[in-house]
Image (cartoon, rainbow, N blue to C red; front, top):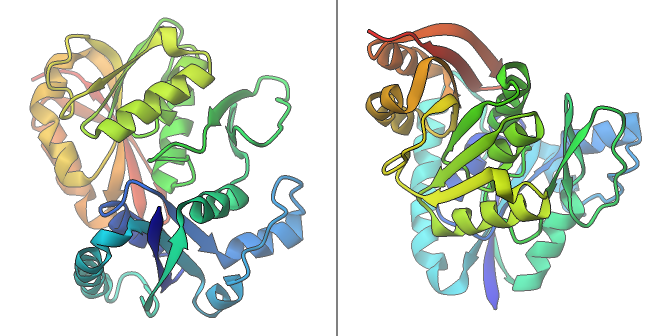
Length: 316
């Protein structure tokens, strides 16, 4: 099967914003090629990262390349939509974030090509006790480390995004033994699986996309935690009967606000809510929306342009 590979030239700071745009148009994969990784490789000499993409020389000019893969038959329609979203990003980011040229190039690739590209870019990622590791790399856990394996057939969420890393760090802080966790918008299942690895009794994981549901189930199985992970196709937590002690949702601000009504019923009184996927301009809007439904602000974290928020369900 052939795919169109879209490559966007941008900056390191804006690379995840561009990646989020591209994820709207593909379930086949998005890769960020950041020139900073090359510098990190040279300085840190990471043994698990021994591949340098040839066209990173091009990324050196602006900072990063973001690549997405789209079925050939959809490429013309998708190209127009991506261009419109990139123009909107450039306008909204003006004066706040440097986005670079946003120059877009296309080429046709065989299906197996982009899988191999994705594999070569991936390396174990460390977040406290959690190590996210591709299944095809041999990694021996150090003392107190918990490995989460991600297989090559996954469609969403490798743990590299700043929002995911903040959520994992916060889960390590707030998950306690016996906790029931709601992972809303689970994607590849990384956060729900992490919660179980950190001691949660059970993770109830939901996603509206069937590809994500299958991916999360598969990753729960290869991590040998499927018995503690329930994965459902659901619009947020619609139809979910479990009451959580902790809920985590790494999605966009507007969709997070849609959660405010249901989450008060599905989260225990004094239960913890971890939310991310929030840019600075939407941060107060999200906090105020949850406060209006009986949530108390506990802490706010940030990485780059992204924020994560911890709140408690104290009730009205």
